[in-house]
Length: 418
Image 1 (cartoon, rainbow, N blue to C red):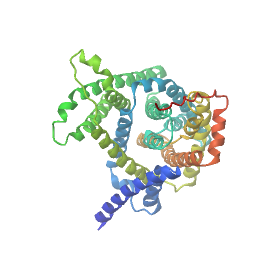
Image 2: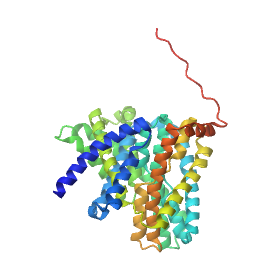
Image 3: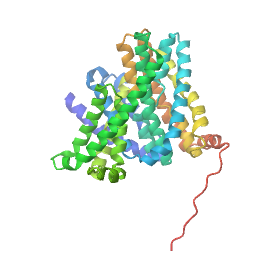
Image 4: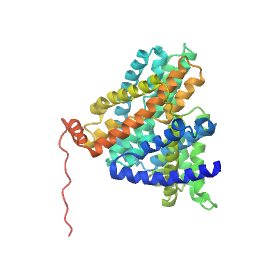
């Protein structure tokens, strides 16, 4: 009977997730918020399911979701769009990451964390989550350039959080390690991962046509994505960056065909059937991911709850001026308003919080619970703020703030049919 109930719940959840997308389109209330609340209800609310029942499958599920969301989103990025978006992405990512790290770290000190632990807390929450940002921007009326900036910022910010947090943990265990050596190691890992992922994209594009001759070949590309990510991690490189480069190269391989043909390399990209398949897989994974995140939220201690809510507010305090100072003049005011509301944390923050506890860091349990609470409130705040911007007069007022000082944008001349 228990198995039948679980199977029924899974089926109902899939139907419900499609309905929630429609609710998002009509009302502006993001579906991820409802999925998160469902997870809280069946987990810490009514104690029907616990994260421990997933065992080691839970963290693997998190990582699989992250990998496929990054890959599926990067397929749609054109190289020229990446080139245009990179300056805005770099300025927004760096300024927002530094601002968040400073304000959250300061709160950590106020909560009597040590300087090292406060810095780790700030870094863990420094980047936005692509697993939350991507589903949101797909449902928002953003220019493609603005969407590209938000997507790239979320991926790069997540990666920076992971790299710097692990470096801080290493520095704590090896206090004589020089900061320049750590920074050099991070930069080298990023660069090599980018090259490795790009080369893997070219190689897969060259063999994909042959792989399609196999039966049930739709799963071969996801398998290749997993190999790229896993091999990069095993070699000490950054798997997320390698996956991003792999997807961008594979999605833009047609523009490289002329150069590759000179080397007698024939390539193809994903066809529409394969892209639709990936989109459906990512949709299902996203649905269960947010329910699983809700299962992990612990709202049983007043310090964790109030601390997480305060951190989420500080994330917003740091985010708004970062957007105002960097990309406000390069994107429409409405888009800048949406970008300023994007403060969600997700997979990387949750994983790093777990690593902190595994490393027996002093006050690690407090850091972990603050991160999970902040993760919950950051998603809630982002969802509510996106709704406010999209559906209430407050959104128009905020848009006028971000439009202050902007030059009027040229309106394309109307054309008449012959």
